[in-house]
Length: 365
Image (cartoon, rainbow, N blue to C red):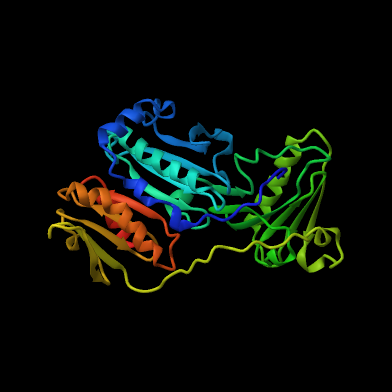
């Protein structure tokens, strides 16, 4: 992307989860939410709404771009649905952190997520999502997720002969969900199990890995077709099969970009872990309560619990927990993650009595 600044990947330790469940006075948050224009029409009908954080402001994301995210940005995603009996609305609100989103941007997204939750009278389930490690629930909203380089600070792509920036897109998945991600234009990024598109502006190559599936090939072909239809100038396209493409083909010659270093992340194995947060002794204490099989019976309404399922972090707020415990819940979850290899796991905040069905589902996974 033209003018793209040299970016550093987010430091997940700076995501400031304290803001996600902070101790700000509820009335103050409610008052602030009432003045946020973005919230004025939310929660009144079933469906998905997305906003991008732009210089601390909440800006509506175009519906035609739902599923497209820039890795230099942070977003808020609200899903509104009816309860099973159809009598009232329920909500899931996610803030999504792009790989190169600045600390100011994702802290603003976390703050505004809490504000939106307050505006909706604490009914929503709150979620933190990190690029590349999104929850299955988040992914279920989109048939495809497209991740592009750049962001609000660098502007959108401008297609002109002199300024057009080429890009390599990676298509991976199945019919149920194909992810499209912009990657470094480097030969080492190619994977025989997937499909790639090299977009050079006037020439577009579709490279089919030897073991790629029909869904990836179809999605790539449709993507190219959409690009052709959106441009006023003629575009030349060519489909390349890995096994029959010569090593000196122009496609390979264009892949000279340096690879990016990826943020370290390890999927931890092992039993589920249950931690209790309690101030019953007169001071806030956080300690391991149990390992292994965890059920609702292990939770106490008087306290807050952090559950590490190894697939996600669940913060459970007991109905009779103290104000101090509630206000510190996400902070302790954040501190817990700081010392874990699986630090980028999705984080979900659940309230006793409102989100029991979701708790049971998380524990059973």
